[in-house]
Length: 298
Ligand code: ATP
Image (cartoon, rainbow, N blue to C red; front, side, top):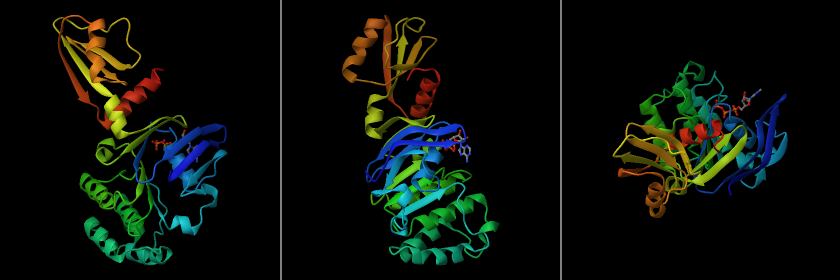
């Protein structure tokens, strides 16, 4: 595991933002941290980056306790966050000149290719850049040293769709060589890129799985009946978001199996005309889990 947390707690006054978070990110993965507003994603990332200290528990990153991160490890970690601190009086070009010597593995050619993709005004002072331009600059600073680990906290906020594409393209250029931990609400943007998903709720990790596994076991099922549909009295415990509209009964199965679905449906419903099964998009995974948490189903 390239990073791990064990029983991580972090309190702000009396509010516990993290309440025993256990997270493991496998090396080489592109791991999405998802969860509702205030779930604790940014706090987790800040603890990992040693911007915040844990109140209890520990985080290990590149084999080192987060509280002991040294320039050696930091030279292998790219970090991009929405509220990144950058020296506003410097131009983008001056800032890159300043950063390069800190990173033994800085690749000037890669830097040029990233900068030409991102089309940043290098002569303008950072405080004169728009929010989106600053995010692009943060990425341009985080990628050229080919980090072993790239941590992105809400990297798309304020970015226009073209820049989002450029941004993901920049990240993808190096995918496979590095591990990526990304916290984002822009689930459509990261859908095709992430290999693992961790769902945080109220400071705890409720679920962490590979996308392959998750999309195999979670399926949207639509059952069209010959008559008006109604929600069955006894709902199997792996069915979430069960709805009856017209003659269609729909639900998300969290333990879908091709072999057992027909039998399960036949035991509960009559007059089935057809059954449609769809893989579930990351956005629906999020809304399904978030609703299930809210309704006490998981
Ligand atoms: P979002 O998706 O809205 O960015 P998040 O999952 O990143 O949310 P965090 O920013 O980690 O959530 O916040 C978790 C909780 O901790 C929230 O309830 C927030 O109000 C609280 N919190 C975070 N930082 C502080 C702080 N500096 N002082 C007090 N409370 C804080």
